[in-house]
Length: 418
Image 1 (cartoon, rainbow, N blue to C red):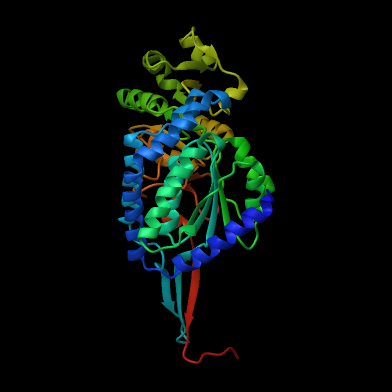
Image 2 (cartoon, rainbow, N blue to C red):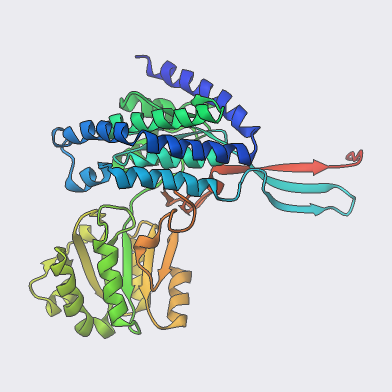
């Protein structure tokens, strides 16, 4: 297969579909989203049968338990995808939204509106629900999308895409608005990332290697969703019952995702009291603990953390713990080893919370809340394309509005420049 030609053909068809979507009303696109949700429900058995084929190959592909867990689809997850599409449909239409409008002293009228980006390429791994979420958010924002999933979920992704295309057809919208590549050849990623003039933006979400490869190959704009090295800092004035509950939830509720805590920072003022109780709770939940010297002086049977541990996204029931002198030391650690994803502080002090919020460089900062809240659905976005760790265009959980660009409209009355 000539991969460049394959992507070119798909992207040209997607551009035509994007032109159609850009001229539709929000009401039409919302009806399409609801039709896609209904199609997913109707195809649930077929989707799960396809998923069974993918799961059968998990061992052969050497997938970890965490990756396999992300791959599984069942009745609840298919229903969750359908509900997410309905939630997206219920949101305010971002397309055509006026950001700012004003008159100049000379009578010239200026307005800045949100418009679709065009064709968005999304490269992802493991989670087949990304197919539905990405398609839904792109549709809501008037964009066509080209999706390339991993080989571990190819059957699931194609089955989900087939259902979504039936939903688009039911709403009289072009099927080419949502395209899932039928190949998992890595050459397709490079071809997408260099499709200048055809694909307007590429968004990689997955492992570090995948994201780095897209960044290095791309000649079109990239929004990256890199590592999730998330921290919880237990301040000297923390409610320790709350701190324990948040720490256990942030690590254990779903350790295989990017918003799970990977490092727990404990203020020296409460370490002697807090560390034994939180360590016991985490061990009871099956977590392997690795600590710095000050931690191990309090919990001698804790494993020793290395320098690499502080910069590791485990995505598993493994946690590094460090005792820090104060909030300044906690912030320094986070900004040194973190990935600008999500970091939390547990404290009763408003001043400490504000200091943490101001100084920590992250796309989401939590105060007295688990890092697991960093999620597009939980933020009310319906779903998310991913969690951007970039600082330009979009940062944090990305919803439909983050998949728009802007356009200036300038209205005069025969104005000319003299």
